Image 1 (cartoon, rainbow, N blue to C red):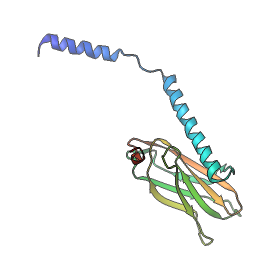
Image 2: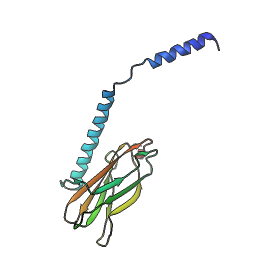
Image 3: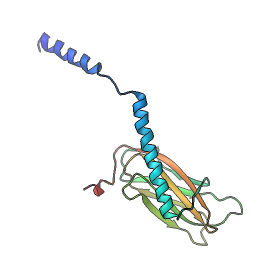
Image 4: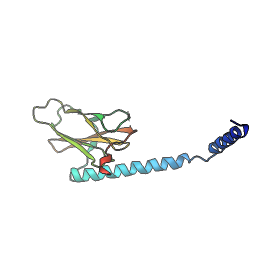
Length: 160
């Protein structure tokens, strides 16, 4: 290797390092827009699925890993914690608003169910907040959610 090649390579490296980086505020705005889009899609799903009834935040816990290396099989646990004297849980619906098919599943519970708890796996298409809505036999809705970061997305078969 010649001295001119080494100096040329070093000069190119310096030029690459001097490229302006995007402003942090710009990246934050893009992330904020994505969150607004996700929230709007979730509100639309709620309006369609629950006929305008709005769930109250609380008493439903959604457990997900904070980071999923692969979105093809992500562990999910949902549990509805009932206050004393509360009505019975009839169903739990799971939503992932950024998926091509955002209504992931509906789990129904009979009268003899002791605990409203579900463990399963699901596919995720992007970073998002997965939410679960528990429906009670008195018509009440309770909701909980958890955010997950997905490094390798799934659900690409809808794009083909």
